[in-house]
Length: 622
Image (tube, rainbow, N blue to C red):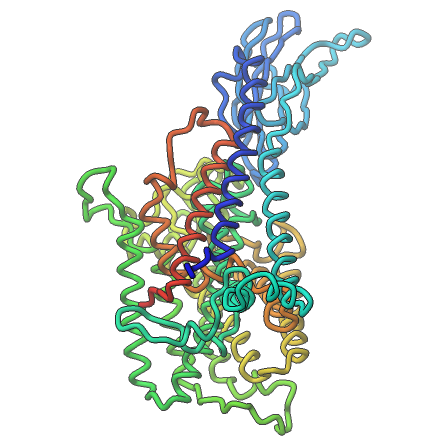
């Protein structure tokens, strides 16, 4: 009998197809609406709206300034100069609420000010006129000329499609495990195929099938002991990262925050670092128990770190569209480079003091509560020393032309007093060590804060805090090993660590975006950013561990599969980003629906590739 098609693969294809069909229908609807506004919206891009400025002041000229709520302590920027009565059309930003300030050109006195949230692709009018009852008073009023529609509709539709498919797959997996359903299937189809279908758990290969060894590929002959929740967590972070890197449908909340604060895009890289730390402890402990020497493991760790770093250099310095690449502007640091250095440092710290933990772990110690912490106090001491070094360099290192301990974005931020101080000590160290031409030239801060100096969010100083993030993930690995098969103890400790990190974050940030001692900042990889994201990571890992490994309500699909091949998926999605079928020419380059369709299809293809590789027992490891 021929081999049946695995259930999960067509479901993923169906997911992408349904998303594509529905989102294209949204595109046509948007296009029809755009036709009615063609005279106005032809020049608009995403995150923009049209504003018609009307001057009804007799013999008065004025200037319109604007400032985004997202731009903390920023200078007002000129939006339009209305030299005489009449009207003029300008483009305004719609990502965040803005404040418009109208100043008279004579004496530059403020006439009026208005705070407003513009909607994407909207058409508005600003009326500046005198109060009829008091001719010396000037009033400002914004009127919506035409309803711009709901630009977030495509992402809402896509979300419900994914949720519906996820529920359907989970329900099908649950039903296939019921005895009544299994008996019913046995009576109606071939028993061999029934057993294969049930054991596959909607596309997951039978564990017995994974025990065979192939001479050319790495296989998972230890899958029965592998925690699916870890690969699921890693895969979830990776898939969101791929979707964000492909554009996130063009939505601003899928792009990195300009400076302080968080968006969805800022969550995933620290989570990936966190789960890498968890895997480091599990892997090294397993190899130490098998009798491998620490020196042998060190050389293995070092070689893997070198490979990661070199692959990172290859990925971020592509030249197929720019001609031959010059060594003079080669970017040195990047995501994989940060991962390689973090992996090396955390692994060395672990190897220095690690001892193989027996299986099962004896639980007759006098201090059962802290047995996963107290024996490792030298490791904690090293991490605290590193963190003290980050604090000293950040707040005490003199930076030419900048105030001591500056954490701001520079540019027009901080009233424009420090335009070339973006990143403070972190940027200064990168320029000093790497050279200005070898750091990232287009940081996210230039979008809102109009910065002009290069800044690398994966720079040298931030690596210290990524080590802290991975070490907290290492702690999660110790919990899993020390309390193996004690699910309640694992869940309680994950929750406790989540609360502890959350409390530390609340103290450091004063529960605010910009007013804390150390704001949450992805560009700086601030310590509050690490504590906040590790709090989220512990809590999310607790939920996934409960659902996947404890109660088995969910087998981790579809995130489990890319989690098993994370390096291949990450490198592949970067290398083939601009190739079909991951990208194609769109009819409307300013349509969220078309961007979202393209990005979801591309991301789903990588999930499908990871699933096929899993079925064929292929895993790319370095």
